[in-house]
Structures are given as C-alpha cells and as structure tokens.
Image 1 (cartoon, rainbow, N blue to C red):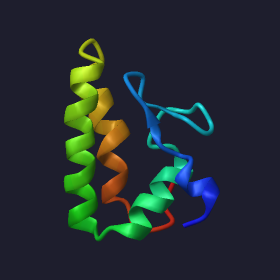
Image 2 (cartoon, rainbow, N blue to C red):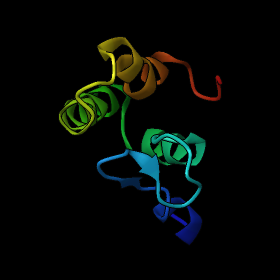
Image 3 (tube, one colour):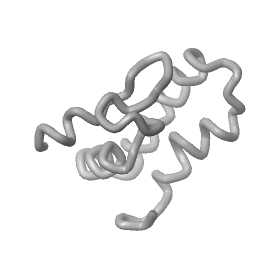
Length: 80
C-alpha cells in the first residue's frame, strides 16, 4: 500500500475522505479496500462502516448510505 492510498481514510462524523474530501469510500479507497479483501469480506466490512455512518449521519437516507457503502462492492473489478 502506498502512502497515497493510506491517506484515503474517512473523517468522522462526515465520512468524507481525509485526503481528497470526496464522500468516503472515494475511488482510491475503494481500490485499496477491494484489493485487500475478498468479495464477501469486503461486503461485511462495508456493511459495518454503513452501520457506523448511519449512527454518525442519522438524517441521511438509508438508500443513499446503501449506494455509497455497499452497491459498489457487487460490481466486477474495474467497473465504475
């Protein structure tokens, strides 16, 4: 893992990326997470993050959190 990838961590309670300011997980974070975890482990990890984010951002619709934290984990590698 390069230093750039390590910097793409979530800032709580906003869950924006500390490095680029985009909603986390940003594209670099997604690449790092997908590369470090199998598909099922990735989905479980991101579900845990979704639950934490839901507590930090209670007014955010569940559907938005699902899209942000989980939907991308079901895509084949390299898909946007």
